[in-house]
Image (tube, rainbow, N blue to C red; front, side, top):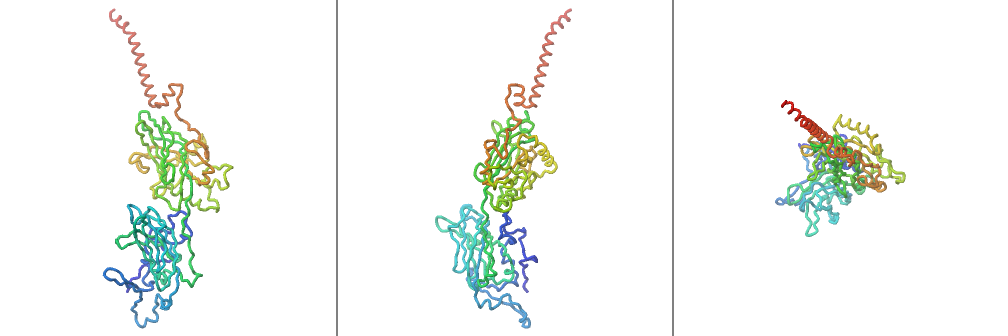
Length: 546
């Protein structure tokens, strides 16, 4: 007695992989073809039950090489059960070949074995019988994970040529192309399989690529196939457009307002010549790393910047691992600058929210995010406040990047309240952008998850659509055009004064000035005491003589 395998589908009619994933789940905007479509973590053949298979396969080998495959049905039953035995395949279906449409959807290839030094230039060749589709001119350069998103439409007669071969080749400009791997789908086994016919929609498979040169897997191909008879057009599945959404042009704008409670690197003066360094590796073009101006002789860890950084940004349906903003505080020195601390802000969820809103073009306006920059009256009609996506005051970090730097409980809430209470007193334009405090950490490894807290920095983050960024341009730092919002000159900066005491206080800091004042008072007192003592020496000597 055969042990039937676990059924392909559960009672709800759909089964997913162990990770409970679905097609397009990594795409923040779920396309129509992915709605309700499961993603399997293996090949579909391994999930068919033995009772659902339309026939058995018998392979013939010459040595170790397979030379033929025979499909048949062999069952041993009792004679009295012959009338009741339900064959999985009608014999009449085998005697009358039918024309079938075969539609293959290839999403992506993952972890391809590099055919060149470290990457490949893969392209697809799909063949079914005498029909072959694909071209080497459609190769993707220098990748190991290729996003194909291709649809192939073929026809065949069943029973007949039923092996659908999907080959992945590596393009070479000189010499022949290298064969990376192949996976084969028996469409005849699908077309006459009751369990497969009951699947709607067909799940995405993760099929292993193999070649004749190695027994090791050469990569994984994510795809699904639809097989439909030609003489039943009314039940033909729809042709899905699996082209991914186009890239969207945005601009990331970050304003560094000020700092608080930053540890002083100069222990003598308890002061810093502080500046902030910001890096966004996910941004395209321009300078990935930008820095503010320097707050010279900053005391009490309270620096003021009012400095804007901006980067061009390309958002697509897939999130990248480096979608984060790194903020570092440094103390400028003559020889080598000292690192004070850093904070890492995960932006994946923030970017995904913006991409979802941008993908709803000409649809209902996305929900308004409070804190978006105001739009000038002369801006185009599309330039509404809801078009600007502002970082909320509280946000949850991306789990793939580790815990968020902002999840600090009561102290974080107190800092937020302090920010809101002092916003009205700030010389900067209030109410236009969310301002939130981010702790910076230093010490062991200069990591935002390790080491000790080294201070706080106040930021505002927003991303603006490309068209709106062109209509509402802003300058770097405090340069023109200084709008949206206007950034005033920072307050509390050191300025030279005609008063030597004020200049000394600004240069040396209150701690050194206090020590210096105490030293001067001690020297002055000693001088006065010595002078008086010297004046009294003759009197003392005269009294001794008398």
